[in-house]
Length: 293
View 1 (cartoon, rainbow, N blue to C red):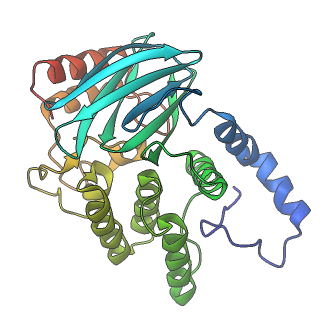
View 2: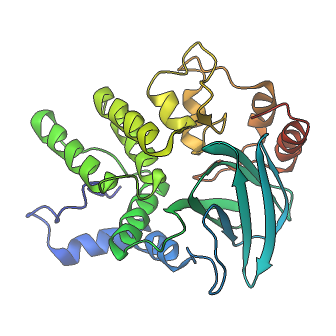
């Protein structure tokens, strides 16, 4: 399988540019990256949104949020626009699509999340700070990382000092000063965890809390702070956002709420957590009744 250098540095000298491009095309990486770049990642012209979500690729049937948050939604062309009002820095947002399937994501104050659905599955999630359009570099970076993660080829390469250098380059590339997109920190945490670079996972967790006053569940789980204890109040949502995280829940002795345990058998094969209709029914009801945060 083709390897994608997560530091996004130049191809290794022994490969020509043409051969690298050919491998990327054959692996499906080029197509996946192009599809992610082509998906709308901004509200339509004239729509002002500073906190909330845009959803493309599926009609939205209903939305449920944790206590303290409120939502308003509207359909504009091919996008569903969801405005979220927060009492705190973050909230759990469950979005059910017209086919009954859906997803659970973290709503972040002063961030607009963009959810891309394809074939009823969540293919990509990204966030923009304050709803400001991302720079071309950020758009290309997150499309590259998301495409590599989708194909299972996003990882730290090398050994010893080389691996450490790659890890530092990855961190510098994905942080971009602050978390321009928290999902980049999420991907980085998984890559660091796979490479057993726990100090780097801890760094992502600390930076995320400092910037967001909240932390995504996956990062808190990889950081080890959810093992054998109740999640802190600043962890959102209370389940993994990436599908691969569900494989670590039992290994890390993470205590999921009963609702998510009951919904887990209904997970669908997507990069980002997507539940089938029975699972979403359980989650939506629990959120609406105030039994989840």
